[in-house]
Every structure is written in C-alpha cells, then in structure tokens.
Length: 537
Image (cartoon, rainbow, N blue to C red; front, side, top):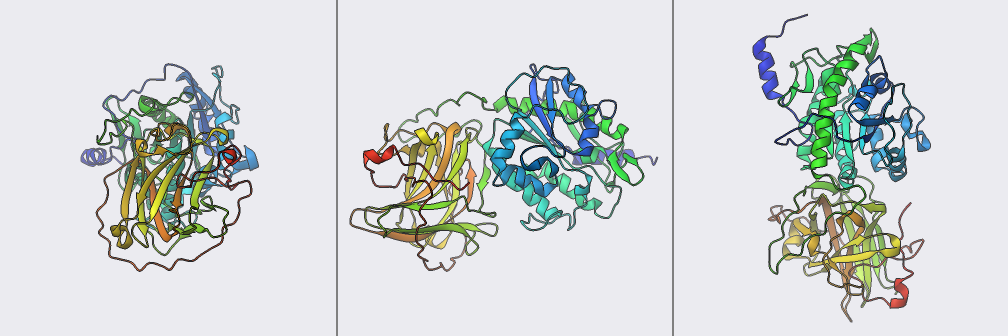
C-alpha cells in the first residue's frame, strides 16, 4: 500500500473537518440513556451492514440503546421500499402519497434483515430515520460544480435539487431525526469525482446553503469511509473528523471483483465510525427537539411596541419555493359569481429559481377570495419563530391577508396578518417576515385578536384578498421563497420587470365546501359549523 505523506494527511484533516449537523460545544458520543426507536431504509448494502457476523450494525445499535427496525425490497404501501434511488426520496417525503408512506414508516416495528434484537420494543413511533441509496447512485453524470436542477435523474444537479426539496418535509417534522447515509462508492472511476463532490456538498454545504440550522438533520459519509483505510468520518475522542486523500474516490472495500457491495471489513469499519456519530447527532437533536406528544410552550406576550424576540430554536429553511408542482395551492372565493381568482406556479416572474406563485384576483364588493394550502395532518412548526416570503404586486395599496390555520378540521382556528402592497413591491421583490405573535385571531372567531401561539398545530396557510364595502379589489401578486423563520426586510435592488396583464379565471367550486379566509367578511354564524376546507387528495 502506498504510504501517505504526513503533511498531506494533516492538510486533508484540517481542510475536511465536517460535522454533518451544527456543532455544539459539548458533543456527547455516549449511548442514549433510554431506548430509542430507529428505522433504516435500505436495500442489499444496508442489509449486509445490519447483518450479524457481516457489518454487525443491527446488534451494535441495540447495544447502544436503539431499538432497530428496517425496510427492504417490497416493503410498505405500494411497495415503496423497492424505490430508494436518490430521485425516489421525493416520492417518499414530498409526493402525493408521502403522508401515507411516512406514517407507515414511523409506525413500522418489523425486521427485514438478519440481526439480533435484544431490546424490548418500547412502543410509540420510530424517532430516528436513517435512509440510504445504493452504490449505483454514485454514478452521477454532469460536473462536480453543477447547480441544483429539477430535471434529470442520476446527475449531480438533480441530486442536489432532490435533497434541497427534502428539507421542506424535514423542517415540518422537528420531532423526528433524519440521517442521510451517503451512497457507497463504485470501483469504476468514470464519475467518481462527481460522487465525491456531491457527497462533500451534502456534508459541508447542503444545510448551510439552505440556512437550515435545526438539529433534526445530519449526514454520515458512508461513501468516504469506504474509499480508503485512512478515510474517516468519526469521533476521534475530542471532535468529529472527516479525513480523505484528494483524488481517492473509488471503492476500496468491494466485496469481490465486479461486486461493489462493501466487504465485511468495510461494513464493520463503517459501524465502528457511525455509532458514536449517531449518538452525537441524537444528543444534539434532543437538546432542542420538541416533545413528540406534548405541545410546545406558548409564545409569551410581548410588551407593547417591543421588538419581536426570536424563539431560541428558530431557523430559516425553505417551506415552498414553487419550483415543483404547486397543485396543492387551491383557489377559493365567495359564491356571488362576480369574484374571480386563480393561483398557480408561473415562470414569468421568479424571485429565485425558475418559478413563483402567481395569484390573479378580482373580488366583488363585500366578497372574499383566498389561495390556500391545507395539510392532511397538522404540522409541528415550533422549531421556527415565524414565516418569511418574497413578494411582488402589480399595484400599490392592495389589501392582502396572510392567513394561518391551526388545529383539526373540526376545531380549526384562523389567524391573520394584514398588510398592503407597497409602491416598492410594484417594481421590486420585497421581503415580508411575520413572527408568530403577529398573526391575530380573526374577528368572527372566539378570542378575537389573540396572538397565534400554536405553531405545533398548523393545518394550513393562505393568501387572502378582502374587498371593502361597496368597492371591488383586483390585481395580481407573486409570492416566492416561502420560508420558516423571520429575517430583516430586504431593500429592493432588482430592476423593474414588466408585469403581466391580469387573466381572469372562473373559480372551480371545491368538492367539499369552501374554506374561509382571514380576509373574509364576517360569515353568518349558522354557516361556521358546516364549512370545511377542501384539499386535493
């Protein structure tokens, strides 16, 4: 074996220290004090890694107080377990059936590989989700520096796009810890530099570029561990280290010539390095994870005229950038026949990326209209201190409501933040940030004017368009980069862009009733008990 020059190893170590999650001052590599439920999504490489007398991961996890379950080929609704390539993660976590798949995943307590489980099932859902693609996913085409791309399959750009999209879901579930296991390497060097670049991006840049600082996402560089005996991603007794030799990007622990399944030696090396890191990731997450079954503490009221105080666990992460299908955003309006509204993703005026959400509206006198998104299940957003979005309009002084819905269909509460389009928003994108306490309970519900204090029970959100008495309201707005967290308002810097003409579109009546908006006129009390939001299934 070629001896590695000491100075190169030192330079590599200093240049490659990586955490896979935000670093804390006192990392703890010890096992959890009580049993934690964990599930691993994998195929054959993961099966070998888990198996007793091969990788020994399953029984070693048990020795560290993790009750392990796993998926494999054929697992789950629609046999979703068959599909674990990088692009398939969108189906798992962002597709039309993702709620169905993830609920099955969280509840799964079965075993699909041959490993010893000595612990008793503690009950409840899986709290930690490990997921891994297999070694063919290291055959990424493109170039190492390619930007995220919504098109393609196994390419550097599309892989980055997929993982950026996953953060939408991960941010909505701070009660779960998601750990990415990078795909193992190939012996073929054709696209090895691309695989290396992508995994380095995942480890060092993915969360940072998305301003994601919550501790419920981490990365273990399985790929790097298997590319050389002196390549590590491990706890060295004092800190996490990530070491490698530049240019060494191919499999060094293949089980046989022509078979890139990691060998017993490689799998056991990965087990030894992964377990202390998993413990560290777990303790980091627990340091500010929300309780799984108990509501978060309510937002404390602020003194009058006081500046909003961000929550301790606040973060900024993309909730919707409208780059993918926006069909879940639906148009609703009053039934006067004169109100018109249409909302959909549009390529004509993005703040970033290729698309933004365009809403065209013409609201009749005393009418209302909304463009709304309702979730199948309530979302826990307590790790954030509010919401931020980019905004443009075709005219100034348009009255607009940003609505937030809390609770189940039967006990839904509506909160509203009211604003008007500014002159600056006509020619430039502007930033609007709304801390939770600035959303106020609507006038027609009990506790009118109360500040929103239930971020762990969000069921939907909307942009609403009210009309004044004897006066209509009409215009077009664009929304982009809807994010968790609050930030300072931006100063307009972009040149003016010609605004498209309003295209009127009739409202398609919803299948099961119309939701009402925080900007709606007061509805007759007799109707409040029967109105239920319509959602696309």
